Length: 236
Image (tube, rainbow, N blue to C red):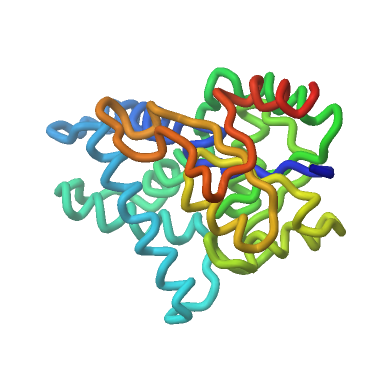
C-alpha cells in the first residue's frame, strides 16, 4: 500500500468517551448537589442521541450543524428527562464541553507520535474543529491538522466526509488509511477507495461489549491490537 496519510475516527477509537464523560458528569453532579443520576448511565444515554441528531443533517432535513450544537441540544433533552432542572446556561455549556475533555486510550499518544514520523496524521471525526483542538491540546494528541465533518460539511458515513478529507491533503483515496475501531466506519471509507485499519477497543461500551470485537475482513486491510501495533505493522 502506498499510504501517505492516516486519518482517525476519534470518539471510541482515539479517546475513551464512556469513562471520560462519566467522570465529567460525576464531578459536575457532586459540585451542583445533583443526586440520583448514575454517571455512566448518563454518559451512555447522551451518546445514544449522537447518531439520531446527526441523521437529521445527513438526511437533509436540517442544514449542517456543528456537533457542539447537536451535543448541547441532546444534553438539554437529557437533563429534562432526568429532572435536573434550573441549570443556568453557563453550567450547561460547561457540561457540554465534557466532550472537549476526553482522555485518550493508553496507547494513543505513543502510537500517533510514532505514526507521525512517516505519515500525515489527522482526525476524520464528526467532531467540530474547536472540539478537536481542545481535546488535542488537553490530551497531547499530535495531529498535523484537523479534518472531518466541519471541513466536509457532512457527517460520516456520508461519502463526502471521507473524500473532502482526502482532497484537503491533495491525496487520492488509495493513499489514505482510515483508522477506526468501528467496522461500519471502515466499510464506508473502503467504499470510497480509502485503505482501512481496524483497532479493537473492547472496553468502549463497557463490560459485555458485543460489537466491533473483531475486524470485518471484507472491508479491513490491516488489523492491529492498538496504535503502537499499527505503527509497527506500517514499518515504524
